[in-house]
Length: 311
Image (cartoon, rainbow, N blue to C red):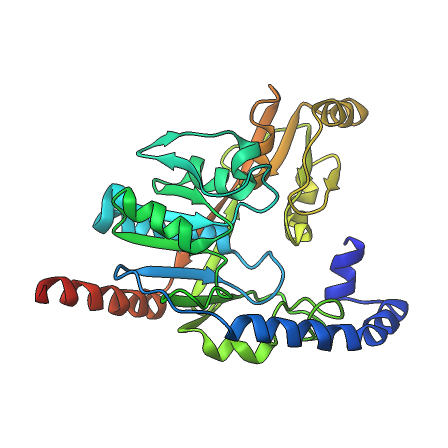
């Protein structure tokens, strides 16, 4: 585990001391977050908007959940479904149309890794925008009939159906940052329309379609220790900070160091290495949404079907 993973999940005695010394700053962070959360003007866009989020730092499955949901909804909305997200750590500003009608329209630097993952591995149109309202307005201009917001629970200025994802991997303490991993007090979970718990409302499964010899595992995702289930298949593993960029020469040197030929990696890592000209083996991830949550989503969508009929 990295320092931060140990800090949040299995802190040492010294890390526990740091955690409790930082509690006053966590209280201040929570107060600022609560004020920001409450002081927002509401926007109603009159189309179904489903937000997939969490109130803690990443790694709870938002990206695969958005993909699974967009696959389900595609049969109903076809090319008029959009995924909108911030585009964390992208090297661009404002509203960027990443993918439209199956055409990828920008590069990785402009989209960010998660948005490009959506663009490559889903059928949905994809937009990045720091301001989700402007992103939604752009989607409406392009004919959106349904929108999925990736990581937008805190955007309470938008009328939407909020699904909060809860990982089966639990934090040691339920404090806000920096003493804990929460961006809002944990009690704010009750404000979601649906709290989805892993292995109860949805399940994640990962697999490798074609296992090859002489692999090394490289990843820059949140909670990368989840990939250690594959450690016996590889010669070595290297974990970078979430969203980290990869250097081609460095990766080649790691392959040479271990006399390896292939790189085992996640889809999020793949979008950053796909143009390196190296042999990449993707860890596929399947997310299955169970009936209770599916039914809640369908009930929400039916509200708009009824509204359209009345009009």
